[in-house]
Image 1 (cartoon, rainbow, N blue to C red):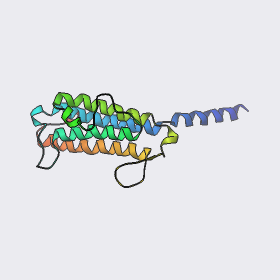
Image 2: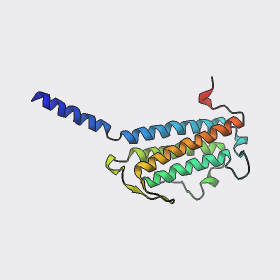
Image 3: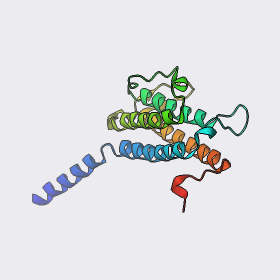
Image 4: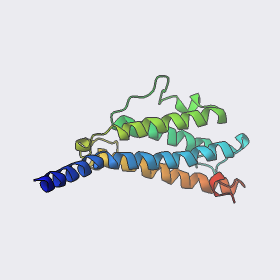
Length: 172
């Protein structure tokens, strides 16, 4: 009887440990990627924030605003509330300087990662509506948020290197 109890306890503890694994790993990856975006926000000189590779393409600051607003957008789709003082319609105007960007990036990252971590395993298949076609779930929304951060990290790395800024984590 002790062997059976041990096996039941082992499988029960293993399944409990897996609860929230997707959420924690996804939030952790977003935190890591966003951390690199924040490092670039600090490394890029303030006078380069308006630089873009050509007309009609987002500038450094435009990419930072976009990442911040997307983090909030995805978080609200996952049930989070916007922090007090955040107005999505005036976000770009509210973040006027380099010094405004870093705390806003951090706050938006905290909001999206908290929203992902708060998802219950049984809610991962819940439907989420987006303003673009397709069928989406909370799992998809979390993965899109992660992919989105990575996409714009790559964009910001390219922008930085085009402007002679080496990403801080890749300096030797």
